[in-house]
Image (cartoon, rainbow, N blue to C red):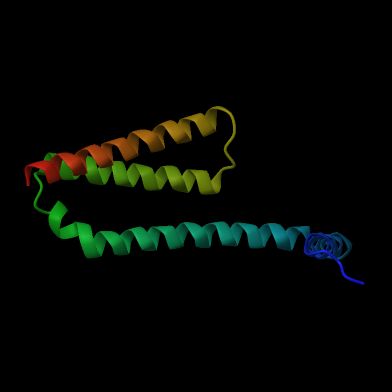
Length: 120
């Protein structure tokens, strides 16, 4: 008897879900979820740091203090905003504030970068 791949996948998911419920593993599952969120946030932070270290640090060091402060301030606020998103489950007004702050930070980063690249 051949079972379609979709049905086989759904049966595997149902078996895993049944094992979690029967063995009362909801706490372990939520703990693993929190650990994965933290690990994902740290992986993103390390990637951004490595990209900055390899490509941007020397160039940004040549900018004037005002533009460096704006760029690094927007980057720090964006990291804090992303950290808030990973810690708190956003909905409603919190989600709106998250996206507005992220959009403003990205705008400042891109505008500062393009402005300094134009005059270099």
